[in-house]
Length: 243
Ligand code: 3Y8
Ligand code: NAP
Image 1 (cartoon, rainbow, N blue to C red):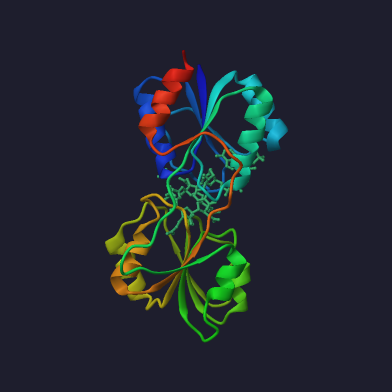
Image 2 (cartoon, helix red, strand yellow):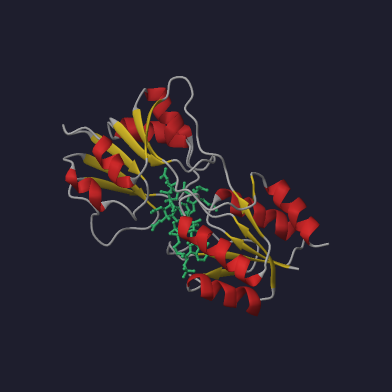
């Protein structure tokens, strides 16, 4: 039975390694958001499917027997399309999802429901903000007179904001390096997506150590679907559905 893995996260890469080790017939799918995505130990495809209909056509043409949606919690459109397409094509779907982060002692977090409300939550007086949300949703932050530190995967064509420093890096990140980064850039606030997982958590651990406030953007809600939290559960599910 051929499995389609919708990837782009640390957990998706861990799943790919396990599937390859098991000699599973599987395809790893990237959206093609970055110039040179990390290679995977499975056959890869890169680029959109062409909406729900494109994905249904793909599932049938490639004789896909199961889909694992291991995309990032903010990749909501892909996840919604997968739910609709798998229902239409009659292909079992399982989400591999990491839980949202929950504040611990010493965390100075405020939760907002959208990128726009994250802008509002920043102070009006000039600050130095680590805006660690990638490059797709930055323009609204120009409304506030802050210096922004941006961490992007690929170099932007032009500076994304009027007063910003861009560093290029592909995670997973580690807390000590992120703490040094926050100190080096004299950061006063952090804005982040509630992505969950270990790959993006470093900046939150660093913020806790430095007592910095974090504005955390809630992840989008998704329609109901079967979800597990570990690679082992996905492998068991695939073994089960291979019966
Ligand atoms: C193209 C594949 C792996 C996967 C690694 C995870 C961890 C490192 C942390 C910060 C936050 C951010 C961003 C981030 C992280 C992992 C994971 C994760 C956040 C790659 C990848 C692709 C992408 C797409 C990219 C987005 C951007 C978001 C940067 C590869 C490296 C900010 C999300 O330039 C762009 O257009 C980048 C776009 C979507 C969010 C955005 O809106 O800009 N991820 N990230 C995937 C594809 O094409 O399908 O290039 O190798 C994967 C990873 N990024 O295999 O180990 O599991 O979350 N990715 C966020 O969480 O806020 C960085 O800097 O602290
Ligand atoms: P999105 O907004 O949910 O999806 C937009 C469109 O991109 C989808 O409709 C689909 O195009 C295509 N797409 C998305 N993920 C795909 C995949 N894995 N394989 C094939 N096509 C895909 O997605 P996004 O937020 O831009 O995320 C894109 C990729 O980056 C995903 O793989 C995600 O896991 C990864 N990522 C995203 C974030 C984030 O913050 N959003 C963070 C880390 C990693 P069609 O409609 O044409 O099929």
